[in-house]
Length: 213
Image 1 (cartoon, helix red, strand yellow):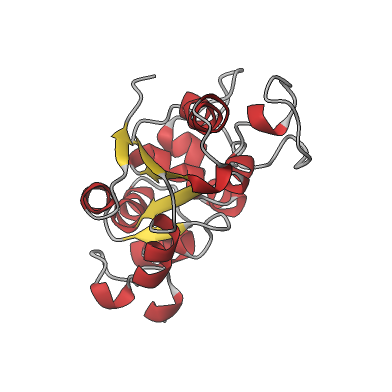
Image 2 (cartoon, rainbow, N blue to C red):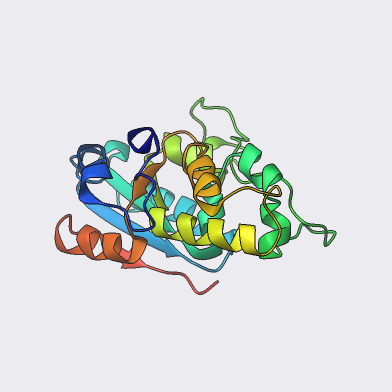
């Protein structure tokens, strides 16, 4: 049913289906500094930039970790950061977006998700410690808010069906519903990422960054 699918089952998400309270609680939590990263083209180096934001703000500028709010506003191919392994595998997300590993083979799972370091405190200079871990799980532990664009997912579902990446006979609506209900833990679905960027800046005073690398 529509209410069981984050954002609902319409191509354009309706206000009645938007989890506005969860969104407001996440992005509007008490913070001294707020930053939003927009990601469209798939450049995993972006996660290193996010890590550097947390480190620079905490260790260089001296902000308390709890007072830092960083949001990842990923859409386009970068929406796949929020997809579970199940979605990466079922719809061959790596092949669909032409995302390849170091050997040139399509990526077959969300290799950017799993935490690599221990949660135990460490020196920020420890290259294997938590403060140098660029995994999404570790960045979430440090306060990263992962947003998913309902519009991008609906549009991608239609493209997956059209180009033969979905099981035969599957409708675009069913694919979108599947994707929306199999996002990584902690993800918040927003109606439209480009609209959300405006809200984050105008209402919640997030500074905007979109690294070119």
